[in-house]
Length: 309
Length: 254
Image (tube, rainbow over all chains, first blue to last red; front, top):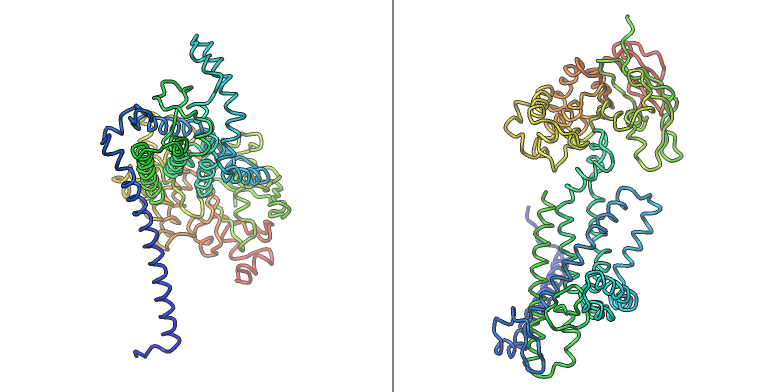
């Protein structure tokens, strides 16, 4: 039998409507903000687009005096530091995650996990400061040593600074390490015990089981974790700005001062006065935005496939 | 009654999880080419007992065990653990084929995991004969290169049996292998057991009395970590010698 809704039912209905309306408003506001934000960036950078057009993407001159701007050195700087950092940190991240998941005693694993979380939450300016005062002098010594080794006087001479691509890569590698290690660890921890024991029961050693059962099982989520870490590295601003050297020329060696898209903006937005200069910096932001979106989509696609499997 | 040939003998096995003692002086003699059922109420140490045999118990953090296990007369503590596990196969409660491997690779998993390379012809032959032994060949012949997890639950469990016997073990431990399966798949596996005894010796953990009665030649009754009674299944079911066995058989404990 169908009955009239009671009074309390009706009240519940009203509550539900209010809640739904509030939720929808919040969601719409968020999306609108992002769209407006992009639109604003697009409009504010039109002077630069009018002056350089699409070739902005592949011109490598950046000269505020003559107001000639091209983004290629920064795009290269961003990709080189991002992928370089990923390349260096990945073996360590895998090692840490495997150690914590399969070898470490719980008494040892818990504090290490805590420390990794702490390291991941450290403000990047602290990494930057450490990079500048500790890492950069080491890189500088290495540069001089390396310059002598290959007989390059230019390297020996420039080695007095130490700031540049290599310092940024090393610093980024350290910064994304906690992030990728904990993501990989999480996926390793959900490998079913039955599978590990199944492998051991067949005479596999622990390492056999890790190599042939656990790692293939987490392969996709690991790749996803690494892509997310890459996204972090590409967008990291403060720490990189402090150690990369604000070089606007196309870098030719790893020791060259350079800029990433993010660090170029941070280094120069205060000096940018003309509309073309400001517009060019904003275009750098747009490029970074697009790269970040692509990386995120790739990561999500990979992760989703990993889950389905 | 003539004395059966013994494949595995345990002497005074004690096992612990942390401070909790799970097994107390378990000494048993497991006959060759027979199904020996391990039965008893939940938490009586059945699973722990079989897991001490292939030393999987000791892999759990905080778990340890003492005592001697003789496999065909050889003390397994003098053997490498990897070899022990090659000679003592295991089938788990829930089917656990490796999801990243094909049916074909799952059968050969014991070789692949330990890095043994087999010539193609030999590998094909092992896969076919092993799958025939578990009655799976005709069902999966066309799916050999699909994921092992694409099979039905009962087929997955038979694939796991195939994986264990592909290593030609002397003894196979079954740890309640049908508890996650439907009745039909259960009876398929039960029927399979007696075929397997022509080549292998089997220890079969179960908490079902009927199942123990149906599948086993010998039965070991465990309670509170002690081996209470061991004997031919018929004899134990008809005339239990221990009061506790009798109570269990008449349904006094879960």
